[in-house]
Length: 371
Image (cartoon, rainbow, N blue to C red; front, side, top):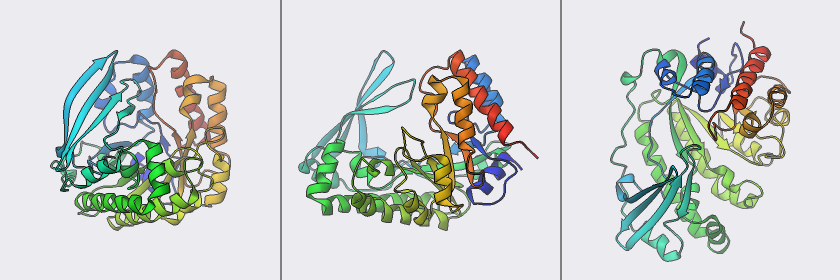
């Protein structure tokens, strides 16, 4: 099987010649991406991973977590760089006044932190709601005619969206979001309805032609899993909205990936019920609350599970710990399973991390041989 066939068959619950392997930060579409890596240790891992890991070609959806405000209405007004950290100040000019957001990005982890949220008060909510909505200017249907040579053998065409409620929660400090849920849940549900409608309209453009987009990544439900919020909020703000998005994705012949860190024991069944094809990273204790073997038993082949090699193990522990983690991931069977790291590199690759990546790949090769 090709890398693409192996991954798609596993996601759809069909037979595959071996367990697919997703190594975050090393899923390349073309060899040129590998050749461009300057760090020799990182390039060495990429060379080995290239023949094992399917690639993902991302097509932008322009869905952000500021009430899905179109990018053309978010204007960058200031950019500062200090010790490699990039801090950006942006403004959203609404009919009722200007909102300001400040973010900082770490160049190594590529993590973006919000320093100032555009919404903090009820008046701010009214301001951002007052902005007339339109489709993002640069949004357009994907064009498969531009795909690189060999794409159909090794890669998937994907786009990404957020769970609609996260586009509400993400525009304000989290404690304020929880306060709003407690004192005015109808307002939060109305805002989530607004975000769902905007995401649906964006997906209608991206998925207009069936079979063009292969795969839709959806993240954010982890913001309402235990102990972040009550089961009631998960039921009201996650379940119905994500179910409708997954239904829309499936109507276009695409697969839907639900990404959720943390404690998922109590919500795994709900992810299955809303129809997701792929759920990851299923982190074991102490980072999560369920082992991969337990999750396989609960899901009973009704969804493909990805995981659960934790980034902290690969970066900080020894090769024996990495091997133990990979072997533990194979416990409970290998049907509808994808071996996957929980994240990419959080820092520069060291000789220690380099050895751990090679041990990870070697144990996967041993436990899931070809033929």
